[in-house]
Each structure stands twice: as C-alpha cells, then as structure tokens.
Amino acid sequence: MGIALLLLGSILGVSAMVFVNASLGISPKARLADIDEAAARLDADRVGFEAADAVLAKDGQGALVVSRAGDCLGLLVARGSDFVIRYLTPGMIREVSAEGETGLRVRLNDFVFAPAHLEFETAETASAWKDRLSALAGPERT
Image 1 (cartoon, helix red, strand yellow):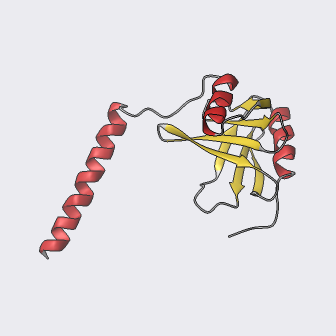
Image 2: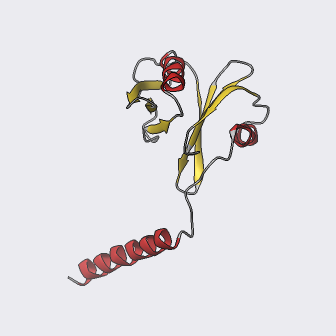
C-alpha cells in the first residue's frame, strides 16, 4: 500500500510540474521564423547541407527543404521547445495524406517519429509537396 501511494504521489507531482510549466509558458513551442532558419538548422545538424527548394509551414512548426545535391529532403518538425529533424530518402516515407485543403500528414518508416502535421498557405503548395513526398514512399519497414 505504501509503495502504491508513493507511486501515485510521484505521478501527481510530476504532472503538476508539467502543468505549471505549460501554463507559465516557460518552454514555449518551437517556431521557425523563415526558410533561412530552417536551412541553418539543417546545416548545423548535418554539416554541408545546402538548401535548394523549400517550404515553411504556415505556423512555423515545420519545414520541408530539398538538398541542393538532391540526395535527400530535410524535414523539420516542432516537438516541444525544439525541432526533430529527419533526412528523407527513398523508402523512408510510409504514408503521405491530405488533411483538409492545405494540410499534410506525413508518416515515416521510423517507429519513434510521431506523424508530422504540416499546414501550408495554399492548396497548390500542399499538393505539390504531397507529390514530392509520395515519390519517397516505399515499403513499410520495422
């Protein structure tokens, strides 16, 4: 019984700290200011990454950036106060689906990467990038 109360108290205490942190905005959600910031983050993460064509999500919560060499497509997605980066090559995408007229949902063949939700300015932009991402789709891997 004592262990159960200790465990319950720990869970409640951690939950309260997370709630207070979120309420006070101590760790605001990550946002990209522009494409240049996305390219700089990709270059810092993978030295020598040079950006070519790119698109920023409407809310700054993500970006898609094609490398100048054409060997990969950089995906940045806000997760908490920082970004998760993936370099997409053929076979890495499990599924790309439309969400409304201007949104995309991207699922990778990477079990630790939660699906990315990207909202763009126009339906044309979403459609064009959906086609680009779909070209990288491949068989499901585990």
